[in-house]
Length: 556
Image (cartoon, rainbow, N blue to C red):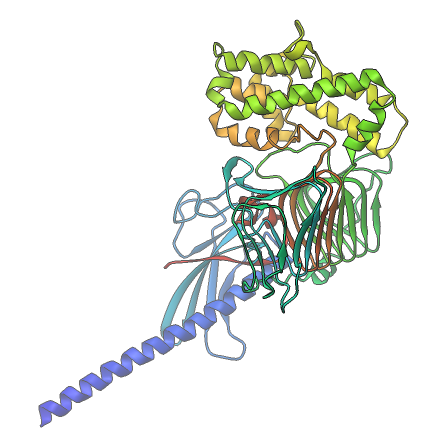
């Protein structure tokens, strides 16, 4: 009997110990989660925060926590955190030389309750809660009109196809929550799925090609909660930006605050800058570069004449009010000019023909054939470059030479106006893109370095192909397949948009990024939306802005 009693006591004591250990581990997890929330708050105030916590006690419950940052470099301990929020490249931690993604924090928390300890590790980044698995996600209806193309790529340096899905959270049994309409000569294509939360069988009325199929009655997609007004208010002590009233405004790295409406008369280019506008933002030109923009009210801007294709560049735009992105309807402008200018009409027609042939030639070949000095594909490629830019030597493809340069010069003589200025920039950009690295930049490597430093893809195709830079071919493909050879008046926006209002894009635009719209979406007259998956992953463009959140829980 005594043996049985002792055995029962030992079993009960063991079960009690296991229960107590489980309870202690659970309590430690709560403490660790409180520490993560505390660290996020510190990082929101100062993205470079690395002071950590040294046994900080919980306020209303037992427990304390520690966070220690490595600020000196290797060696790294598995109890050390690393703040890499300010860098566009991955950093080292105890896991690997690239264990901390770009623009993120590897946070290691040691939590204690009584005698029980637990270590928790997470990756934090801006936009950590802003994962977007759709090219376009809307809370209200989506209406598309005219030529529309929605596709997706893995990244700006990786042209691998990914699904470009479209979804609306419109609930109930409403019809026509996603629609497309167009003339017989117009078309639309979605390289992904189109879905709606509405249970009406007529919720999706596309009349267009949807490669992934369509489905109604799909559960709503989750929208993150972004406190745009609070974020703007927290930056009210930042200096005001210096606006160039006679040209482009360049904002260097740092925070800038505007107390009220802001109008930028030309282009707005960010170089690692974060702009906070406590009112409306109106940019007469484009918004480009690398950084974030937070707007309290309405946002209006135009497309850019070029696209950089740089994987670490793009704008993260957060607008509490509606966003309007305007193109210049450049093709209609060119048609009007051509009707009264036969020389310009001929050059424009020839340029379109050469570019169409180039498009087919580019897609039918590889870097190996386009770059090989003896391959006929390279010879043909160079002939096409001669036709489009000032390449030197005899005329090129179709007996033409420097067509883009000629068109830029001819259009510059026309009456002044925003569309004229845009088209001059556009044809100048096209001319630069087809130049030779050796002829115009003193060497192919110089042209590549210029692109990497400034985003100007002058001679990029020629240089990357001739040097067989396979590692850069993805970026070349991203740029050259989105010029819009059949629509030379197309403008561009490279970045991602989050708005709590509506989103409208009109008149020959290519959007390279993605859309999160809490209102409705309207796409009109020649819109291409290319979803870039990498922009929404840790270290992507959306890491330029948005709330700091947990991007991943790491196994310990």
